[in-house]
Image 1 (tube, rainbow, N blue to C red):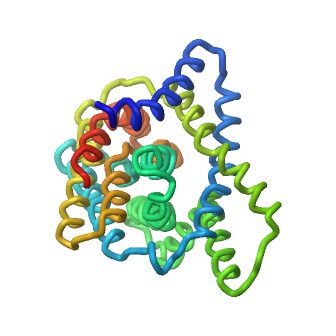
Image 2: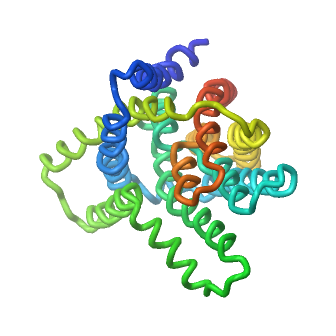
Length: 314
């Protein structure tokens, strides 16, 4: 119970507060959108920049951790995609969007604050290593799958599809923040010393990222009312909250991952699909109601998923 009250609930109380003020019309949709734009386009990219710039890449980039986490993610995708296409008889585009809901964990807005509260700021290195390739890899995969699906029967060249996917990824602020952090990391290893004032300003922005994002997430979730498509929503919740962390934990045991990388991989895998799952569905106009409701329902259910995995991890 200590884990629930001291680690998990504070994060969800901030989300709940954002939900409450949006529900009571004390914070309208324009304000919520503005706050989320600040968080996702500026503060969170700066947070990622600071963490990646100071990351010891040689020590913290564990291939075994990546394989364990992303094997679970892609297995969840294909389970969700296959069930949506062949069992639920959804359209191919809907199946890709539903698979993406199963694939994309909320590694940043939920994963980072939960991990920090559970194990301390020094335990975030593994999470940052996962996040460093999370959006580039999964967005590239998702966009490619959707473009291939939409191009069925057409003669679009593979290079054109690849360029669409790459362009979409490289224009994402989170990716820009990560790439800038990698560049700064390499420059610092080469001897560059940045003024203390630079890091002080960056850290001020970074400290604003998570509270703003969590509060704004609550406001965004208020829009996603549970409705219809119960089977598809259940598939997404089970794949993202049960299949993904279970596969990740099993492979972590097989690879004998150290405690730090194992915690980062499993805790991140136990997170609900993020708002990006809905944004992806919205971009393509596919399974939007499923994605929106899944984000809301799975975020609430993830309290139990996170509690379970933190309880059994060393």
